[in-house]
Image (cartoon, rainbow, N blue to C red; front, side, top):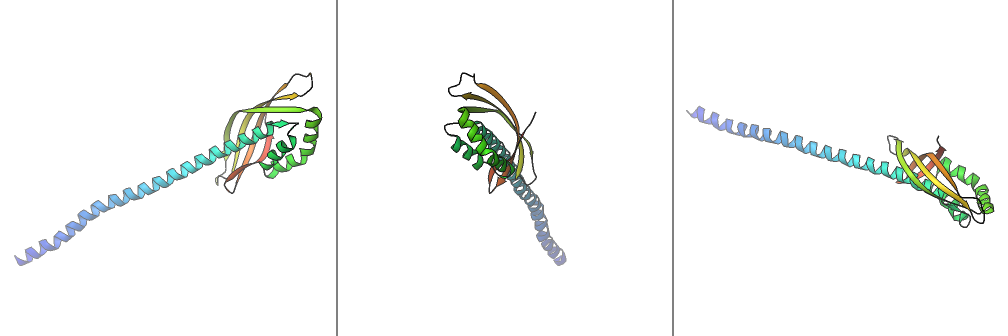
Length: 175
């Protein structure tokens, strides 16, 4: 009988450990899943923010390109250059003097609106994106009897993320 009592005592701690293990294993799995799902949600939210920021940067750049007046052309051109980087900045800088001279000489005023924009692609590191932008503008000439002209643009705008900010880095007209 003494042996029987010692056996049942030694089994109780084992059965308690088994119950504890049965309870702890699912709790640990749930905790791991909770942390992992939370991390994936955070990543998904960050990716969505980057997609939206890339689209907004392309739209802002398009609007900046479309807002040019002979009265403010120096400031307008500087704004375009300051909102770009890479190839877009180099091209616009190269053509800036010619654009300023033509705008002043013709007393041109251009205003525009973005009609639509959508993300085409984004690299895996979420640092370069391509956005299609549909924009329209009206160009008028002060002191001229020429009727204002409607112009329609379809651009592929490459934007690049530098130090957390998105900049237009390449602009291509698309058909």
